Length: 95
Length: 187
Image (tube, rainbow over all chains, first blue to last red; front, side):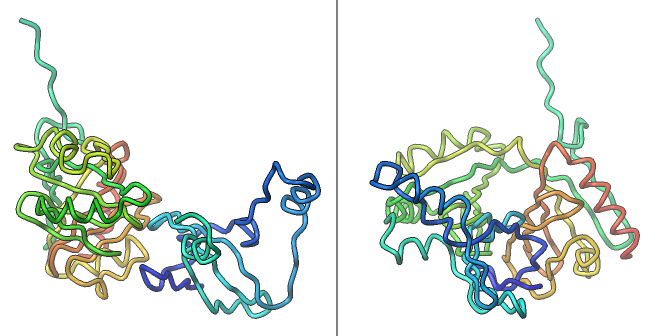
């Protein structure tokens, strides 16, 4: 399987490590109302879609960047690869 | 007078080692001091300005560049490895600190790495046995981190016939052995 790294081009998936659902990027606010329920959801509950799935991959044997990979769980086709940094910034986080 | 401490090369000898396998020459290169440079968050512009003023090249993703005094390879987003001649810049971090101030984090790297310079007419024949990086497609100056013999190494294509492998110094012997074994198979 080849992952098309947004900076470095096509790289072998051997170089990457899989973390899981990209929703892990959105850690709930521990001080907010209903934080317990939000954290139970964050830590234990995952969607399990048959189709497009956004997930976090780490380029461990390359430039050590975190990526958000959109993969079809039925066909394993990878449609988009973005830097997790850019995804977070687009969502208005960080700078 | 007490004996002076004696510096050893990464392979553990007094002088750098050179090995020849067929058309390939593997040279242990100890003539460069290295330091990593990482822009601090929000200070990327200041780092680019300081580097331009000091004549330090900061190449884009997957590339390396050489300036008058400093050379640089891209490590990751807003991170570079800088090198300079060991003879004049042994304390490279002290030389870089005043240039970048608090806009960047600079870490001494010289003794963390071993650098092997490989010269041969057909280097891809060796590298296709060592790693999954396509050195044929890599442009001149192209640089990337990859795995050789289970070790994370930087591969720098200096020219069509010269490639540098920069790997962890603590595994210099294993990496050297892997290069020689690969070369015996390739040539």
